Length: 120
Image (cartoon, rainbow, N blue to C red):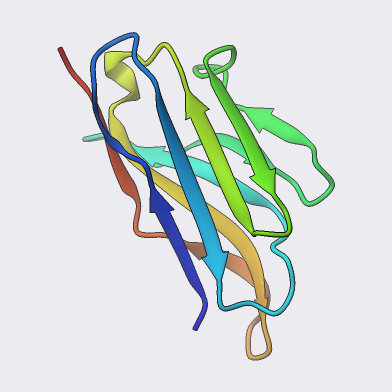
């Protein structure tokens, strides 16, 4: 069974740090593009950072210089190191991974999300 599972969220004070992880499992081939998105209360889902299968990295302007995304291709795991967290970073963080199954071919799969709350 294909699964995408996030972990690492929690409650942190402004200026603090968290590290999120996302692992894809139940697949025969390594994931292609993997990325982090977030949904803040009352807002639409927005991209945060992603790593393509070729290693290209993209960040949303709002997190540049504070967040660092990385991946372990062989482990099909994506990380998001979040530093200098702000109140506006509060959101559910979701991971997306382009995976292949025999029945569906390559398509994005989403995790359930991990909550990040930045509060004093």
